[in-house]
Length: 77
Image (cartoon, rainbow, N blue to C red; front, top):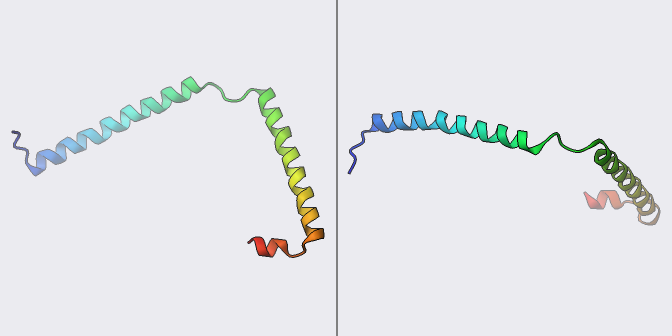
């Protein structure tokens, strides 16, 4: 059907790569723009409070494990 030589194939691929990169760059920028600014200050504060509570719980659990099962850290690794 088409008689494409090796040089022509290289030229086609050499054109398709930057065209694809340009299109994908535009798609990424469009998605970033549509995503909005991210979390609101209130949502970020709530997530940070939840993370702090979880960190406190983990610390409490580690304290309990240290008292009830000394050496648990070396076995967990």
